[in-house]
Image (cartoon, rainbow, N blue to C red; front, side):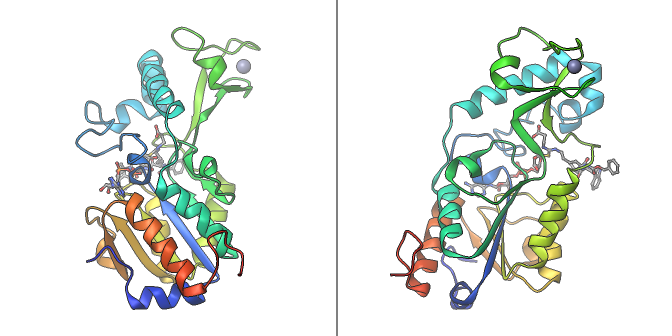
Length: 257
Ligand code: BV8
Ligand code: ZN
């Protein structure tokens, strides 16, 4: 286990035409977004099913909205970190680059990544459960208690995937296609516990990708990976991007000199 890319990875960085990143809450930890299962995890007090599920919302919409309003406020005040920035820079250099994220914080797009597949939705979006009308956070956070639809009075919910809910089909299909075509697949900052998302790195590996994991801790995926870069993604991803620039002899703007 090391934090620096091996010669085998440098070789692949030199020739890769497709690098795909699969990210979880860990990549946003250094931006100040609490992870789910860490000691400070946002689920430290509750179990996921007690908050991020339709049953929880029907049972106690005010508690679920209090939790999401709290997270929306945290996320509104944070910025992408060098890990997000490095992935956006890679997209300037490699023709086919994609980010498959489990995160709902929108930080990849804010860092400049353009091909981003959000498997679990986006906390900046909300919609009415009855008529589907879309609402931004400015509207829902301005209302006390559980926000109701201005069109039909229905309950408004965050546009995220709850436990027991299907993932968005288009994002899922695009993510599988990207994983199947990846030369290098990076699994970054995820405990690899939540399915079906956690099956995607395995699809990449089975399709011939060089599978790299970036995490300060080992996970259930670690035994399967070709390379485990142990450490925080905010440090490791910029180093990986510098190595990509070095072996391909490109300028940092991604353009050939
Ligand atoms: C579905 C959005 C079916 C909401 C989320 C039993 C076995 C297997 C599966 C199941 C099971 N029982 C139920 C299931 C299915 C269930 C599931 O997988 N449960 C798990 C808990 C066992 N999955 C579902 O319900 C999914 N839907 O299966 O539907 C279906 C089929 C047909 C018809 C209808 C339905 C839906 C799952 C989506 C749930 N929504 N989020 C919200 O955010 O509020 S999940 C949530 O947790 C996140 O989105 C994220 O995706 C997920 C995983 O968390 P991670 O991102 O990995 O974060 P975590 O804290 O766990 O780990 C952080 C990592 O970062 C750690 O490893 C840490 O070491 C590392 N780290 C820390 N600092 C850094 C770092 N890494 C790098 N740098 C650092 N600085
Ligand atoms: Zn409505």
